[in-house]
Length: 249
Image: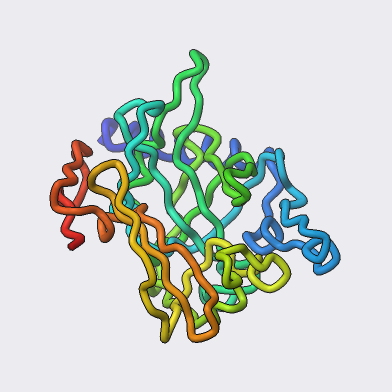
């Protein structure tokens, strides 16, 4: 009986410590983090007003994080984990500054880049609380988790579904972003319809991205972060991966 009590006390202590850690940072919504005013967008400024801040957000997981496979020589273990999440408003619907990319890598006291161990266990529909630093990578806002205790699963709901978006709202015919109309969909879960593949790019020997265009000539690149765009010669050494080989033909 005493052993069960001690185990329960230990678990409760961990939960209390986790909530205490997140409580010291402002708790905001994904939309608050991502939303940029029309005036700033018109001036080609799409930076989050929380850039550089440490914040806590609660959000819905879009896809099984295990489906992402991004090799990285700078992260211990050889892979850089990511997951995409949506604002919890409207049942976790996409669009209108509701999407966010989360990077599950943190730096320890020795300056080493380490993966957040639990991120690959996230599945679509999970409701999670995350604490991290708001940053940018190649023009894209992302939340970098603060440490290995910065991710907590609060519950689950139905997995999000994509919304249909006009490619012309995202890019022009030179594949350039239309910030004024497209920024609201950054990191959202969307579906493009009636588009045609115009080119494919094979790189690193076994990874493929491709361009698609709509009837008006607007073009967008479809990137290769997921197993879906790895060729059969791609082999992962990640132990928790759902499969070990690519299948893109």
